[in-house]
Image (cartoon, rainbow, N blue to C red; front, top):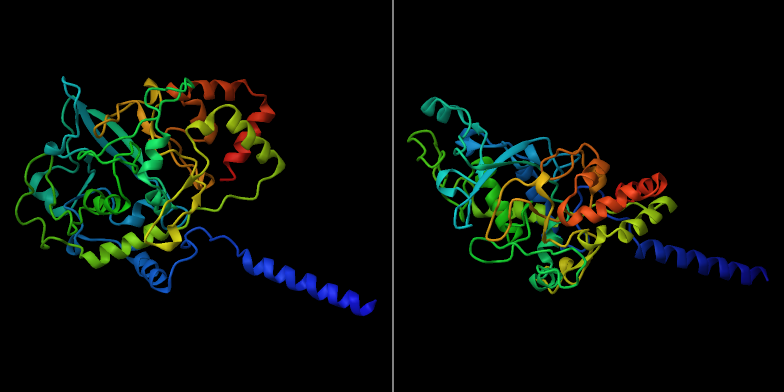
Length: 387
């Protein structure tokens, strides 16, 4: 009998070890996704110091900018996270209904900082916004898991859309379109189609650092940048460093949800029951992908990447070919517990405050949340704070 017990004990130990090996701990915040090749992991590691670097006028900063580096905005609680900077966007709806991004006058992002050389040349310290334009403020979101959002097939986003509310549930998610007609998915109005374009645009728009695909410094409210204030030739960042920065952001793992308590499990059920999951789709699936780590994977993103009307109280600017003033892309909730400010402009200090500011298509879910018992509302908040 002793020998039998020893054999059984050994078998149980072996099985336990196999389970441990087969189920490694999820990535920590700021770690890369699992399944990268050695070369891809090297790219991720090489991209981090570029993401964390601080540009100066001598190394390409400005002449207009909002931050001195990627991590100036994306640093909390680690590189790739959110930040404290709030920036200014503006656009205008023309009489024919067309959304003018004010690109010929410096928009849609109006930089709030200048290099000393540009300030001395023009005597101003922020980019003026055209009179009569609609204005918006934007906080900095985290970029964790954005590589997975980039890998979601366009067909999946289109299939989730219901612009005419054919199912009659009051939810009519719409696809936004970039200026060339492509399906958008990144940004608070889902304007930018791909992560690579999102990253390249951030270098030029947010830091004033030109890259090979965007070699133009732009203008100051539509006026040419005065000669002599930008000492470096364009592009100021070469293609290799752009690609490494892209690899870092692309391979950043989404925050792993916490193990759910009984209260949080109840909250997840209530979250679905009151209709929140109709827009905050719990999971999205990627398709075939040249990077194996992204191929046919499920990501717990809690977004449909679509535009939804959030009501007049939150309305600010139009953007792209579709997004109206009150329409916003469903915010991904992965990593929500690491956020410090909520909604697109940071006006909500807590998750509950953000829920109560939902309007438009989300009004029924907001009202249903308010109608819950205090214990049920606390359960939903416990669930959201586990993401």
